[in-house]
Image 1 (tube, rainbow over the protein chains, first blue to last red):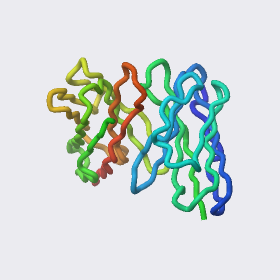
Image 2: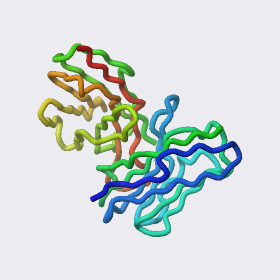
Image 3: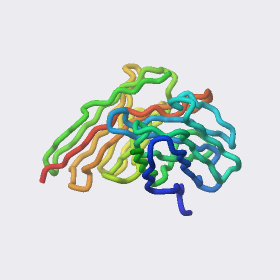
Image 4: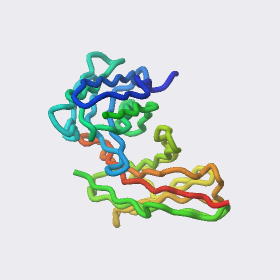
Length: 113
Length: 114
């Protein structure tokens, strides 16, 4: 199994631009999670899906952030418009029947100038 | 929602000594407590977890203890080695239902001094 796959691995963009992060979970996993990691705030849960349905998006910082999961093997996290304070590492993770053992992807390092 | 506090934020120990990292949680319903290790520039990786029906779990040099009454759990690493240097995160979850996901502590930077 290839594990959780994320793309791109690095993204540098200018303030105001749209950013789209992509994730492919481990095949057969029912849960998909999006996290953001910064030095100041640590590892924060943004949103998670169960069987492609968003369950808890209370961690999404504001309306500029949106996430979708059109099918069991693909999810996107979009930031529009991006701001410098969005600079962080964004991780996607997936887990099986329970929300327990989560496997993280390699992360996308986002820098907004 | 759940709140997880983790201490210390930085821990420096001599190679071969033991290291202990402590976490407290606020939601008595939480029943699953994983620990993740994150090396510099890498992804968090699960190293050990414990469920609320047991008080202790060991895996070679790593052990985790849980005190449900006091709502705290700890990670113990014995005979530390240079490759143990990393940031360690604790987390808590109620896995029986509800909308909440994992809540992470802020992390402990473990430094193993040669």
